[in-house]
Every structure is written in C-alpha cells, then in structure tokens.
Image 1 (cartoon, rainbow, N blue to C red):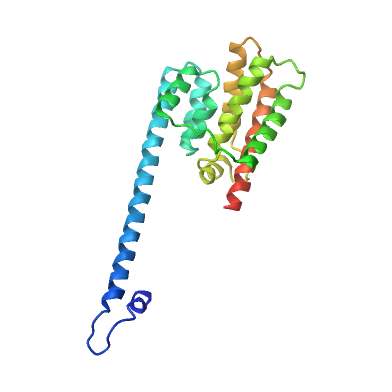
Image 2: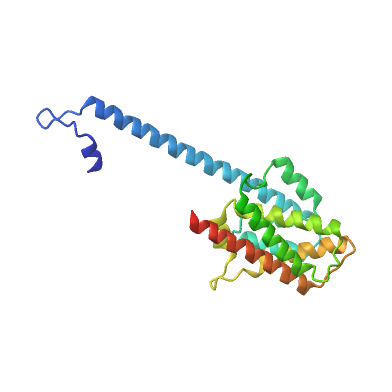
Length: 225
C-alpha cells in the first residue's frame, strides 16, 4: 500500500501516474540500488580481508613448532572468533606475523580522538599488568612491549565487537577457555625467549583478567550502539 499511496497522483479515471511522482519513485529506487551495491562491496571487501588474515594465520600455523598454540588457533577459528583478533594476540614476539600484517595493512590502530577508548585501554592494561607483575620484577623493556601488545589487541576488539562477543562466550556467558589460553601461551613463549620465565597460573590469571576486561568493554559499547 505504501507504494500505491506514494503514487498519489494516480488518476482514477485515466489510470495514469503523475510524472513528477514517478520520477521521485525512480530516484528512490536508484538510491536504494546504490546503497545495496555499496553494502555488497563492503561485504566483499571484508571477506577479502578475512581471507588474507586467515592465510597469515595458516602460514604461522604451518611454520610454527608449538603444537599447543597451533591447536588453540584452530579451535578459535572453528568457534568463528574474528581472525583479526586472533592474529593480534599472536603478534607478541612473532616478527614475521607482524611484518605480514603490516605489509597488508590489516590491523586497526584505533580511532584517533577516542578519549573514552584510550582511558579504558589504559585502565585495563594497568590492572592486567599489575596481575602479571605483582613482584615488580618485570624488566621495563618487556613491560613496554607487553603494554603495546595489549593495546594492539584491545584496538582489534572493536573492529567487530558483536561477533567477538557472540563467539567468545560459552552458554553460561563465561570466556571460552582457548581465548584465555592463547594469550597466556603466547606470553609464556615471549617471556621464555627473553629469559624471564613466569609461572603458567600467573600468566593464565593475567590473560583471563585482560580478556574479560576487553569483552566487558565490547558489551558496553555494543549496548550503546
């Protein structure tokens, strides 16, 4: 009925459409078609981006020697966790991955001027680091690199927050275990490589605290949109 009413210029006797009304209708159709085309182009661009991300992840899996990390990545992909978020976790201590991502310009650096986002990032990072470095033994160089890594991960969470929330929680709204384990294992290897081994339980506690902080912020942002 809406379309019929739009043609309010219908002449009941001559059964004709008002030319001006018809032109407006054609303009609306053209605008709608352009919008659909833009949406399809956006979906295609996103699909190509995901394909690149998955290729980098598969390359990392094929060349990696840590079977536990490879299995965790596979499980997270099976859960449909955004590949961008998974890759951001893997970057710490893996320069080849960083280079591949940088060459493809795939990672988000966060929105400039987003003060709330910056404050939230710093709060989550500081609280998480305090869990990891309770004894204040972490060298400054490592602390700075871990801090940058957390910021990197945080920024990727808001590329597709709805999908991240949907795929990161189990039926009881708890963070799925592989998403807690992966950052812990990546950090374990990074600290070992830098001659600063840490207790796994501490790493797991840090990882859980950090990921929960990210998901809670993603939920908060999603509810506002």
